[in-house]
Length: 426
Image 1 (tube, rainbow, N blue to C red):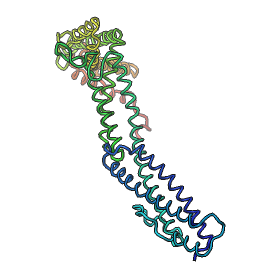
Image 2: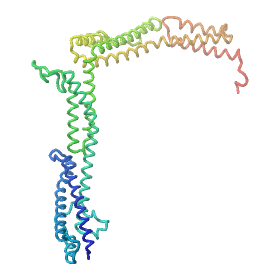
Image 3: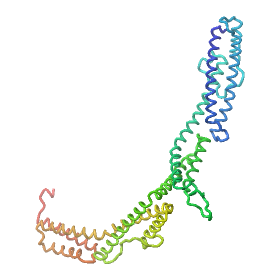
Image 4: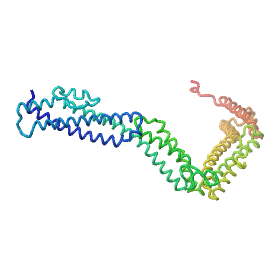
């Protein structure tokens, strides 16, 4: 049988718990309105969680109202006086032991188990179930909020880069989809210059942002990746346009300098090829050269191509330079690399001849140091090697064999004049 102190303690706990439930419900309600408050735009798991939260919130507010009704009835029965008679205490105990009106919070059954549940009234158990349900809903909402924030944090720098690129395009008089104030279509039916990569990047970002807003728990990874993939070429395109606009003269001068490097490398390769033909092989077999027309072909030659770009720059058509100069530069750099490789390849026969001559001189000097310089047998091996490397054209394979024959003869003659010490045979 409950005592007066039991009843008063139970009412105090209920009042305190009811106030806590009201505060947490208000906080959860505001949270859901702020972050999940546009149901038509929500999708997937986020939409399901939001719908479930709104449905359960209704029941939780009903539970709160039922507890308030119970507390109001208990307060009326309790009265203001300090004393409670046995009958009034029994009626209050009966109120506390009655099951409050309204449905029990979904998913909260058993929330009070393990905490002296048998000693608690049905009203206390309902209160604890409601608080547990509120916290579960809050955890689900927090998961959505955290996922959305993480995605937005990842997209934020991409959005800033895109905004900066669009600001640059506007400074240059361009728009993401077309250039100038006329828009995409000119009066004569021609399409204005465009920065289509910017429009593509903006669309990719908008698509990813919409997915994050609708269902941050299940955003397709490819949507997020697509933003970076689309943004990179957009930034490159705008940077090229800005550079062409702001550094037109310097870039064209740098292109002229690069062309001079290509010409110099090509001349080195041609000179080395002539040297091989005139002094080594007598023919051009195995030698390399750049393809015909690389320099002066009307359409694809580097000189006419650069001249057209320079003329466009002088005429103020910096957009043409912006799109054309990077392609010219890539071609010129590739040609320079090829010309450098050709020069190295064409230098190989002369380098091989010089190495054989150096080896023969070193062997001859060694023969002199060892007292074998006057050896007739060695001289008979040396003379053919010297003649082979001094003639034109030179058969390098034959000359190498003769130099090695002289080296072998020198090696064979050395032990006869300088017998090996005993320890060398150990």
